[in-house]
Amino acid sequence: MRSRWTTAVVLAGMWALSLVLYLRAPSRVPTHWNAHGEIDSWGPPATLFILPAVAVMLVLLLSVLPRLDPRRANWEKFGGEVRVIVNVLVMFLAWVQVATFGG
Image 1 (tube, helix red, strand yellow):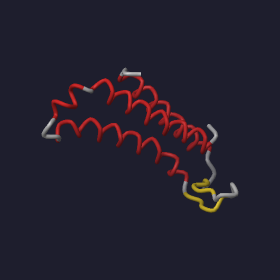
Image 2: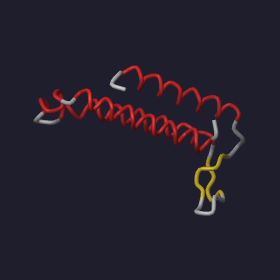
Image 3: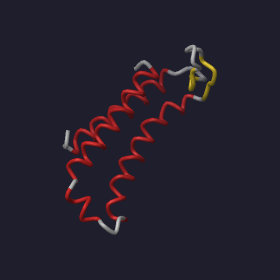
Image 4: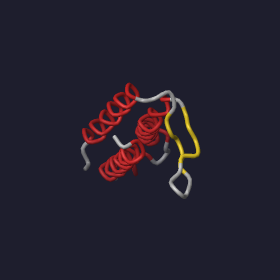
């Protein structure tokens, strides 16, 4: 789980799934469901790329934060743990994408 390849592979899978779904998507896709599981919001097919984009922004943010922190030595001590957290968050977003769009 501390591998950087895990994040790259999951991100590539998310983008690939979004592209496949985008190519097969109707003119509007569901974007929100209410408590009863009924669709109450629709959007253009481009919304399929939101979760992969958020995942990429998360990875970029967590790679830039150590450089901005005045106590960056602490980041270096826990680099492996930070990578685990990034991997888990990216995998969670991938799970949300699959659960939402039924890929």
